[in-house]
Image 1 (cartoon, protein in one colour):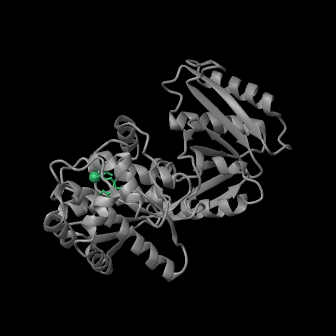
Image 2 (image 1 turned 180 degrees about the horizontal axis):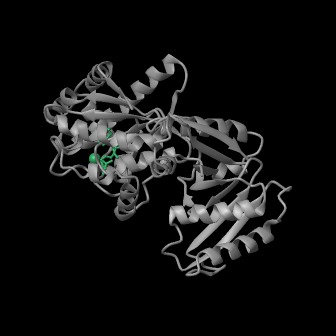
Length: 400
Ligand code: ATP
Ligand code: MG
């Protein structure tokens, strides 16, 4: 019996006249995310996506890995493996259902179950309540250790009788939710090697934003391994973000200039302003090149977490931003952020001990309440802008 994966739309199932464009983006993203595993036959019908392995091409790919990739695609509400059943008669459906459940062993350790059914093929001889009742009886006979619990079953078997076939599944897993990446415009993520910024990327991508990243490094003060940490984070984020491009900017000369010319307590806030200015320049370049312009910056800042993340410091950095700065973590606790980092599997990489450029020449007592007037005076004493421009001119790019 053939087994496939089906995925259900999340929020976009509720969209009106523009649903089609969301669907097209979703299907494109599914293809892209699955392309790491192989080539599949992908079709859609009634807010459901059918993913089938192709004989001789991808028939050796296991369904678990397909499910796990699909669970990272924003826009999907649920993902499940299904047995594809011939629906000539209820008896054939029942017989194949038992065979499928025995083969997959999904009921072996359960004590209770129920059957749910949906029937879009109205020519099928049994209606929905009858299917549930009759199939429930067949399963009880075949698996006498089970009993029915309609309120709180351990396993819910779902039989969908559709035009081409009937589909039976025993394990409906939640999808990533949100909106398909690419339907809400583009933004530029400021990606460090820390815990927070990958989580920020995940949260904004979830609302359909296509993200590229910019990372600042300061070799030789930051090591090759620190950069590898960031590229490993991009690998982990890739299935969620789709077609991620990483821009690497060398800020060593600029950081030396700040160290040598600026009052120490202001070094952090000025460095952060220069990062934003570099991001502005990159956004400007993208604008000149034409399509897919960035409409916002994203950071992993969280209010009060460190000295550079006080309201005053955030105000001083935002002052130089040409675009809105999205800070999805602003009101979250570290525990909540860590839970998300674990969920998206970035935590173990983020906690590797390689230093970020923000921790190079860190002042002992960074200013928690910086004043714009002081910043203007300090920035007037050295031409930092030309070093920012120089760094941006030498950007290197990696595509994931
Ligand atoms: P994270 O865990 O994301 O590193 P953090 O708690 O260490 O955050 P900061 O170092 O103050 O906080 O950085 C705040 C935000 O600034 C980061 O979330 C990120 O968006 C951006 N940022 C910091 N360092 C870099 C860097 N080297 N390259 C690009 N962006 C950075
Ligand atoms: Mg950091």
